[in-house]
Structure formats: C-alpha cells, structure tokens
Length: 465
Image 1: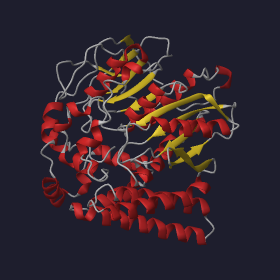
Image 2 (image 1 turned 30 degrees about the vertical axis):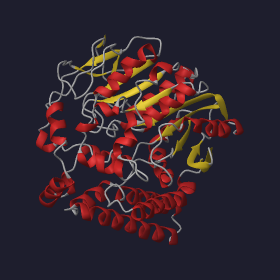
Image 3 (image 1 turned 120 degrees about the horizontal axis):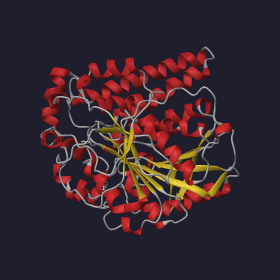
C-alpha cells in the first residue's frame, strides 16, 4: 500500500467548479430532448453513474453494453431490459436442467435486476409498474435461498400493514452481532441493497434491507412516507426474537430519500445507536425548482392518489428534526450529485454539529455507485467502532489485499449553511482521506484533482435514487 501525506482538514469540501452550469443544463433535459439524444447516441451514452448502478446490481458488463446500445428511444427502454431478463431466465432454466444450481441462481438474480431496471423508465400506468415490480421481486426470491443461504425474507409489522424485508446474519464470528438496517431510496429496492451490503456480513455485521412505506413492494399502497419512524418497533421485534442479535447494537442507514427516514428513526427512537445517510436531501423545497424534469417525472410514478412530486418531497425536510438528534450521524456526500445538490450533505453535517462525520467524494455522483465498495466498508468500520468491536490485531485476517483507492475526504463540519444552488467559491486540493477512529480529528491526503470532464459528456444522474 502506498504512503500518503496526511493533514487536518478544517475547511469545507472541494466543489465542482462546473456544478452551476451542470444544474442549469439539467433543468433543460426534458423527455423530448432525451429522446433526440437517444436517437443519435443510444442509451450507451447515458451517465457513468447509471452504468455503475447496474454494475452494483452485478449485471454482466456485456449485458449492460448490449442493452444500452440497442435503446434509441425512451419507448425501447422497458422492452430492452425485459428482453434481457427473459434471456437470463432462459439461461437459468438451462443451468437447472444441467444441475448447475449456483449458476442458475446467479442468472435469476440477473433477471430480477433487469426487471427492476425496466420499470425505471416506463409510462405511468400503475399496472405496468406493478407487473415489473412483481416479476423482479418474485424472481429474486426464487434465487436468493440458493445463492445466499444466510438470507431470509420476513415481514415487519407497521401500523395495520406489514413491510417486506430481508435479513442476513453472519454464520461465523463473535455473537451477538450488531445489525445495520438499510433503507432504499425512491427508485432503489431492498433486493438491490441486499446485493450491495453482503460484504458487511464478512466483518461480523448482520443486515436488514427494508422496503419502507412508499418504496419497492411497499409502493403499492402509499406514496413515500417520511413519518414512518414507528417501523422501528417492528425492527426491534425481529432483533429481540433472534438469538444471535442484540437490541443494543442496532443502527439505521438510509440511501438518498431514505436518508431522512433513517435520521428520523434515530431522532425519535433512542434505542438506535446512530444513523447513516448517503447523498441525502436536507431541505428539499429549497432547491426543488432546479431539479431535472426527468427526476420529477420519476417521483410522480411514486405518488399515490392526488399527491404531487412536491407533496412527496416536502415531508422529507430535516431542518426542524436534526436538533432532536442525540446519536452519531455518518453522512456520505457527492461533489457531482445531479439529483440532490451536494450542499445538502454539507448543510446536514453543519446542522448536526459534533454528532456528524461527513465523508466527501469530490468526483462522486448521486448514490456514490462508483464508490460503493468504499462507503460500504466505512459504514461497517463506523458501526463496529460504535459497538466496540474494532478488529484486534491478532484476529485480523492475513494477506489482506491492498485497500482500493478512495476519493473520499472526511470533513469537520462547518457551522455555516450553504443553501440553494451549488456554489463554487471554495476550492481545495484534498481528494482522499483515511478514516481514523471516532475519537480522532479527520485527516486527508493531498492529490492533484483530475481534469474536469466536458459538460457535453455529463448528462444528469437519472433514476439513481
């Protein structure tokens, strides 16, 4: 592992100097303009962050390239990914006839994720959305017992309903295990998060992924509900009934729109050790008018009855909630976020004060898909430190591979709030940090920033929640 020069970072994170221009362009990316773009360049030219999301779903690179290359209009999106899903199902049946059960399960997982991608760009016909979602959920559930035998699907009680969830507990290690509960964003689902989070099992952390009210399977009966923190009662019921889990070692993590829900849960339920938020909104109505029309359209597919997109996002503001927080908060921010302004993560960290740790990725897009391995690893370290489970040197596995290069910078939050559109008034050369223990000051490693990409090659992050 290469040597790094470290220094204390007390300034605000480095901004992307082209952010204001990029956000202005995002407001012009209407469905009609995207149609013209796809007609000439195909979906293969869509943002890297979208492709990184598909890779995080473990879809083969060849499939991603082939499907996107064949899409030359929004109307071809669903058909292209449905066809890919059917090919994977055909492959799965062939592997099953040959007795290759593991390979068949992998093919079914790929099919499930293709069905999920297909519903990200559809008409607003709820029947279409329900069919695609059901195909994804059912296909995934058929494969997961063979591919991940430690995982089981459960139902969490919530008010008069139940919420679908997956639970996975490490098979070896020191019991009881801490648990990290993961909440998806507006367009992600519990199945997707389960694929991301399995590395946590290797470091002794149990995981639960939940379709909280209004997302995933739970989108069938309501729009996304920010005021759903009472689902923690169902979560703790599960933990208390499991012999290998400890109700005193539970934390909550929220991805994108799920971030405010995780923070709300931690603020109102003191049983939780802390919360993690990945590229979350902080004060959404402050910047909602600048959001891409395509992001608005996607949120409208989640609205039930007479709710508008504004009605949905308005409930997820945190300005009045953060003062109630008493537990540690880990925030992951992305400098090139085109769905939620990067300043939202900075403002949230500033509002939470000494409780917050902000990990900043200057080159990251919404959801930090290209940095997924890094922030998942940091989340695991953070939780293990909270419960006092730092890995002793004698127990550390031998011959560890080199740590992947990170572009994160860990920030001591500023007390000032930068609102509205992304700003460009601060430039820092800090692009990497090694995260110290919770009791230490943040440290950073200096590196030369990469050359800025041309805006013509940077469409907004779409459907990355």
